[in-house]
Amino acid sequence: MADAQWTGPRGADLGEWLPVLDLVEPPRQRRLTVLVRLLLLIPHFIVLFFLHIAAFFTVIVGWFAALVLGRLPEPVFRFLAGYLGYRMRVSASAMLLIDRYPPFTLTPPPDYPVQIEVRPTELNRLAVFFRLFLMIPAAVVQGLASSGWWALSFIWWLITLVLGRMPRPLFEASAATLRYSMRFSAYFMMLTPAYPKGFFGDDALSVPEQQTRSATRPLVMSGAGKALLTLFLIIGVAADITTSATTTWTSDTTDNW
Image (cartoon, rainbow, N blue to C red; front, side, top):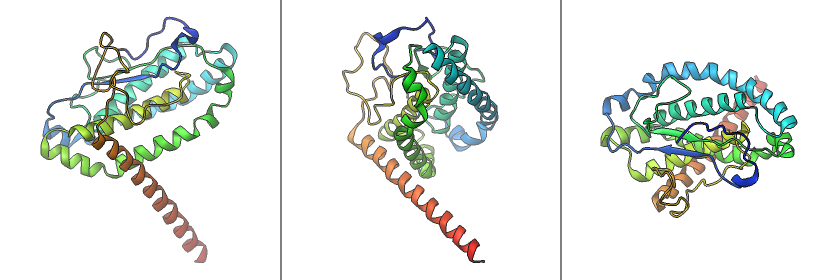
């Protein structure tokens, strides 16, 4: 498990290899840290604010470089992979998927319960050129699922606080939401040529027994987990409609005055 493994471009041999999010599901969580989780993460949110700005400009540089070279330069790849991994660790903690505090580093310790794996490879220049248009469908799915999760986050927080753990179906759906967000971000930042897939989980045989496995590699989802994912999407759509209607009503009211 690693945030980035740069060994030079590997070409088409990777095929449709998808970026991996490895999570170690905690059997129990400390209720006190669950209670004040978002407060504890405020320093990380501040760091992420500045990292996001740096990543934004790095993506622009990487886009031009990828058009010329057909891949991301190694320093660009390493920084964006490190930033993405850092963001996923903070997000996993905020979503109550882990109980261990994220380290303030772009390279986590090997035993940290959240790891991502992205592999440098050649990029299709045409797909890079039209990346902003190609990512729109995935952006819609990712946005709706994430907003749906956060719209009901108080309920998930209360359940985890009372039980001292996250029920397995909720863990599956939350992990699937975070993993799809990671794959979407990796595609947007040109860390992978593979379009985001696997929103509703993986087949149990998708990862051979001899390869590295985790709670999310493969992410085999139960019927209840898939139902919760669908709920996230529905709530996300409802929240988007409500926000649009409220904005329109406020605008009309202001114009009338």
